[in-house]
Length: 250
Ligand code: MF3
Ligand code: CO
Image (cartoon, rainbow, N blue to C red; front, side, top):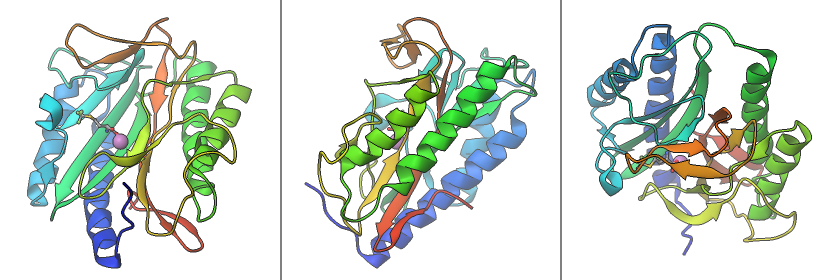
């Protein structure tokens, strides 16, 4: 079931989403050669607690950390481990969720450590980020959920990359994951009609190779089956009469 949000609810989601945006900004400033994923986890947790908010992923379905830190062939849900040391050229996807005042915000960004290893890595980041923007652009009243996935998929595949199919975006609000599911692939003009007052997390996960995935023995980390690199950008947005507005941006 999809419940449209009131103004008051939207401002609470926005507040949480802004804290997530702050976290990603701070984490981005710490991404560097020799830094561990756990260092990022520490600054993220510290900031969320300072803002009197709750790290939303910690304990969610048993997930043990504040952040997901997924490096190179890791797509999502990577653990921010002490022994995960970042090195020059790594693509580091950082995903964070915050709960404050009963409402969730959720966002993700992929960073490069210092400099890109090659032109394809740079293109992967640019294409993934741009595909999120294109998806957000069509998330407006009267369009359909399939239009979002269609916009993302068309752009990504034209660039020669693949859209991960096994994980999708979602509604967000009183729960981290609400209906509807928002696939990053799809057919134009299909699916639920988008309406003003919907809040959602759109989150393309894109790989340089095939879209097939595998979960590591830790039970969480999702990697590309073929070992190619992946990127992940996510925003929490609200659909308004004129179009959608990004909540997880400073
Ligand atoms: N950010 C992820 C999402 O967008 C959630 C991570 S799941 C968790 O759906 F279990 F790690 F919290
Ligand atoms: Co999400």
